[in-house]
Image (cartoon, rainbow, N blue to C red; front, top):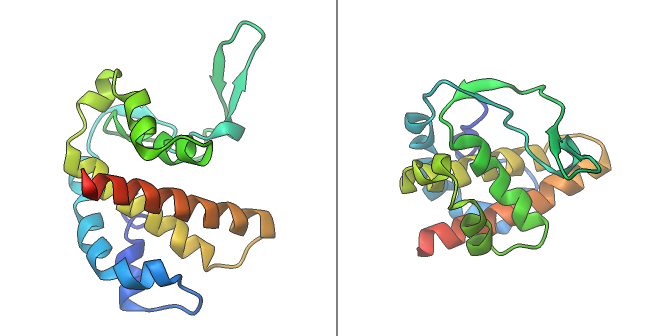
Length: 160
């Protein structure tokens, strides 16, 4: 997980064509914030790390099945919930409402505030770097929307 979540560090060291104005303005500060993320990832919880609508099936009884375990790792229990926040924002929730939805869950309650903020920075950096890469149009469009959701979450966390 370590190499993947150093995107802001990479983007500040080697600026790329097409980086968004928002990213350009905040990249150095976000590189500092994202460095803290890896200090909080240790744990023994089995993590999906890609929770989003297209990786969940809901049956007729309302039971949710999580599919596509391509990125499974072990780590801190709050991480999968943190991966879910930007997806809730993409689905129309405000950052505050997304966090409030998860706030009743013990794993979320155990997450240090600075860990959540540094995760928000790190995952948004992954999407910004990915947005600049080659790929199918639908994937690049998703990453663009994800960057916007991540930026909204980051701004909320930094104001709180």
